[in-house]
Amino acid sequence: MAVAGLRVEGVYKAFGGVLALAGVSLEVAPGERRAVIGPNGAGKSTLFKVIAGELRPDRGRVLLGGREITGRPQEGVVRLGLARTFQRSSLFPELSVWENVALAREAARGQAGSWRKALAPDEEVAAVLEGVGLAERAGVEAGRLSHGEKRQLEIAMALVQRPSVLLLDEPLAGLSGAERERIGRLILGLDPRITVLLVEHDLDYALRFAHQVTVLHYGEVVAQGPPEAIRQDPTVQEIYVGSGWAVGEGGKDPSGEVVLACRGLAAGYGAMRVLQGVDLEVRRGEVVALLGRNGMGKTTLLSALMGLLPLQGGEVLLLGEGVGHLPPYRRAHRGMALVPQGRRMFEGLSVEEELRLAAQGLGGRWTVERVFEVFPRLKERRQVASRALSGGEQQMVAIARALLRNPKVVLMDEPSEGLSPLMVRQVAEVVQTLKAEGETVLLAEQNVQMALSVADRVYILEHGEIVWAGRPEEASDRVLAEHLGV
Image 1 (spheres, rainbow, N blue to C red):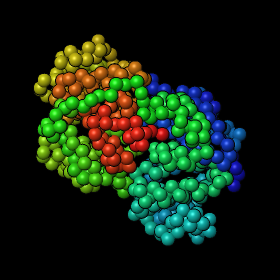
Image 2: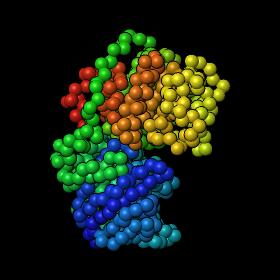
Image 3: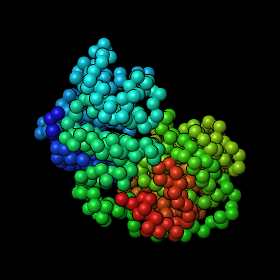
Image 4: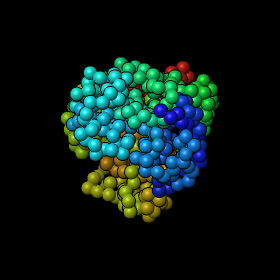
């Protein structure tokens, strides 16, 4: 195995008007363990895709072992010694564990068509399966593996390619405690000659794993250094916990009517169980904040409440009535509205057209005219194409679309994601406006201090379970550091 390092020089990548990477540079020494961390929308996945050849950068270059690989196709990058795993399992579910690993090896050699050769007994495949703990599962169909075993198989498929550089994209996501421990030990025990880059939302593990840490925020490198220096870096703490906001004091009557609740909720993606035993309630007129580090289950919980993910256990209650069996459109008709992550403007529509489309056939106190009264900026921009708006303005449109359904409860998924500090304050003002209007809101948010400034009550998610609940003023520095800090 050749030992190689990795260098990224001044990489830029934009999608439309959104700059995902803004001059990212990093250098990873041969055999180094590097963790890449940062909040949602920081550019971590985009960086991995550029390094692996899935995306071509707009500017800058990538070098593997001193050899430029910028813009090479993925298969060419693999043959030069770079392998990766993915956030979501990327397997052939109908093939056996052995066949998945053997075919990955043949594909890396440029011989993916050698089906008979892939199926033949092979000491190298056997050794890799033994190394990841799957030797006894070699003949099992990949689709029948547990989620943790699928992670082991993906790592085996990468290792059989004999990489000099390995990219691991959230390998612990969605794992149970025992599975995290098992896969975590496997990653820590990887051949020390392999250079490893890790993106992982379990920050405790990422910092335990890494020799060096790179912190991304808004597509830029804001800090690099050894784990202990990163833990103490005030810029990094500001990113994860925040400051400069006045913490709210709750104040809503805790005995008010429960509009939305879940009891013992469990949900996930296929075999990957993300949420387990979640109990939560939102009362009329409250803003309830749902906090947690990236990857802890906030978006999954909102998706399960809205019916976009099937329940694996528990129940969802709207005004005391079970709705967990209903499809999303039926829940919407009953009074639930979702402001999705990423805003999702419609191509070719103006602001006013988006709003009138959302309000079509509906009645209630929220009308397009009422929206324009409450959000005068949208009235000013009513004839502008919604996709031409700033991020903060698009977020206002997304919230307004939900309000035009005149819902009983609004679910907001990461409304500040990817926005500048000024735009984040505008979103906070919008939420405060909804609070003054008496709307009921469940807010999943990565900007901790912004969320605390608008919330009446707070829940904190960690590894798919509620680990703390209380009022914003009760969320001490110790609580925030323990569950949300670096």
